[in-house]
Each structure stands twice: as C-alpha cells, then as structure tokens.
Length: 63
Image 1 (cartoon, one colour):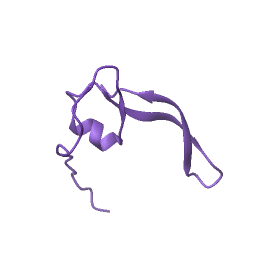
Image 2 (cartoon, one colour; image 1 turned 90 degrees about the horizontal axis):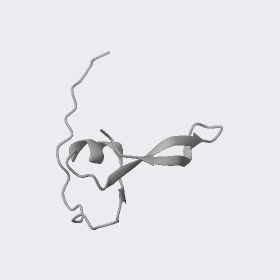
Image 3 (cartoon, helix red, strand yellow; image 1 turned 90 degrees about the vertical axis):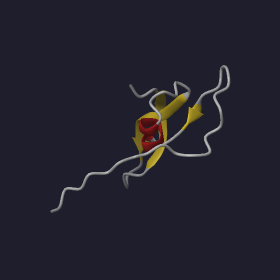
Image 4 (spheres, one colour; image 1 turned 135 degrees about the horizontal axis):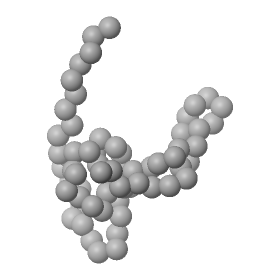
C-alpha cells in the first residue's frame, strides 16, 4: 500500500479572533493555524454502534 505525504496549508476565510470567543474547527484546520489560540477541536468523541461520531465530551486546543 502506498504511503503518501499530506500537507495541510492555511485555510482562508476564518473570521478574525474575537475576545472570549472560541471557534470549533476540524483538526486539519487547527493544525494549519497553530498561531490561532481561539481554535478548538472536538475531543473524546462518542460513537454510535456503527462507529459514527454523534457527540463529544470536551473541546481541545491542539498544541
């Protein structure tokens, strides 16, 4: 099986940071913007019997 290298570049059209506001984004978006401390991702996901994510128990800042 081939092993590829993926690069996640910065995304466009994120709103400017605002005081006391967090934005829930996907992990690739958060990874592409490590300087943005207002971006959080779903964490500790809850899955249904088919393995689909239905909820999360927390939000996380990626470091």
